[in-house]
Length: 302
Image 1 (spheres, one colour):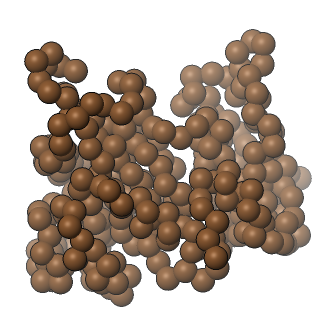
Image 2 (cartoon, one colour):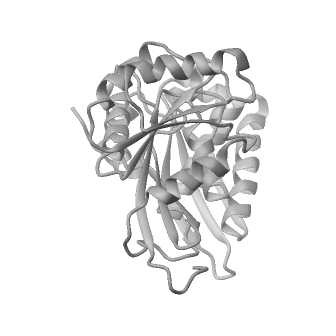
Image 3 (cartoon, helix red, strand yellow):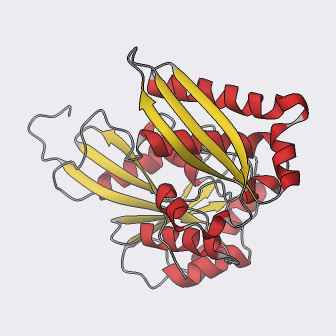
C-alpha cells in the first residue's frame, strides 16, 4: 500500500456479458498479467475465476464469469449458473458488450435480468479499436434506453484504450474494508486448475471451430519433483474416436504442439520447469461426470 495512513478498501467487481465479449481479456488487463485463459472462440471461460488487482490502498476482486447464453446441456447450464452466481454480492457489476455487435438477443436478454438489480451496474463497450466509430454512441444510447446504467465506458481491453478511466472508477466505487488476499496474489485459482485451463486454452486456439466444445481436461497427477520442477499428467477428454484422431494429429504432431505450447506457458507463469504429459481419452459422456465438474469449479446442476 502506498499510503500508510489511508484506510484500506476492498470490493467485488463482477464481469458479465454474452460469450466472446472479452471478459477474460479485460480481467488480465486490469490485473496486469495473465490469470484467465483467452481465445477468439466464444465460451472459452467455463467457470468462475477471481483476478486480484491492486491500486494504491484498494484491492479489486475481479470475478471473471462464463459468457451468458441459452443453455442446451448440463455443462451449459452449469456455466450459465456460474455466471449469475458470480454476480451475487458484487459491489459493482460490469456489463461488458462487444462494441462491434451492439444490440442482439443475447445482450438484451441479459439486460432484462440485470436492470432491476440493486447493485451498481455500469455499461462497458469493449473492442472499440475494431468497432465502427460512427456506431459506438448509437449503440450506447440504445443500451442505456433499455436500462439506466450508472456509467458508460468505451474501452479496448486488448490495446488498453479507456482502461485507466474504467479502473479509476472501479477503485473509487469500492467500500472500506480489509484486503482479502496477500499483496502478491493475483488469482484464487489453484495451480492444478490453472494447469488444466492453460492446456484447454491451447486446444481452443489450435483446433477447428466445433471440436474444443467437445473436450475437457482431467487432471490425473500434479506433483513437485525433488529438483523443484512440476510434473503434470492430464487427460484430454473427447466424445468420439474421430475427435481423438484430430487432437493426436498425423504422427502425434498436433498433441505434441498443444503440449509444447501449454508447457512453455505454464513454465512462464509458475516460474518453474514443467514436465507435462498429455494423452487423449474417448469418454462419450464426460459432461455427465460429476467429479469433473468439481475439478472445473462448477456446481452440479440439473
